[in-house]
Amino acid sequence: MAKLFELILTWLSIIPNYRDSMKELKVNHLYAVDLATAIASCGPELSKMLGQCFGMCRRANEFSAKYGHCFMTDGTCSNKKYSREKGFMMSIVNVFGNMGGFDKFITLLSKGVDTELGTCDPASIIPLPLISGFLEQLKQVKVLCNEDMTQGFAIQASMLLKVRIENLNDIELKELDKDVPLLIIRLMTSFMGLY
Image (tube, rainbow, N blue to C red):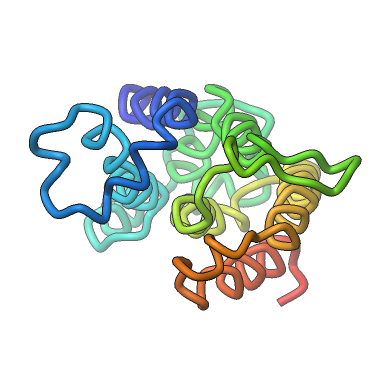
């Protein structure tokens, strides 16, 4: 599990360097001949793998049901009141948190976003569909996280996403699926316990 998290977190830290290649994803099969585009195209698959680790698939749920009581990894992220029945899933959350997973996601969100000025640098921002894919997976662990971690993450992410959505430029609006900003707002309100 730690190796998979390491792969995902490494990708999250390098993807801002491949921002231009993300635009090329619309060209069919360019990932087969262009390394930068291939790296950029890994986002949806990696976010799904993260979700599977957090129990968003049948096999993970069955494994967690069988070994759910096994608590293996301490950390500051998990909510201790679920340690008896969801110990295994809490261990996974702790491993992700201990590796800096939640912080690296906030770092990714903050690329090109200035919350003090309320502005975004269009040359540095991360595309919203990529953000929504990872945010959807992280929402699944909300119940397993302790309240301080959940609130801290939600406050930071919501401030960054508010500025990001307020500063959508005309090109982004034209190319963006109209449901993505609404999905992000729903995910954040759910994460904050408001939905």
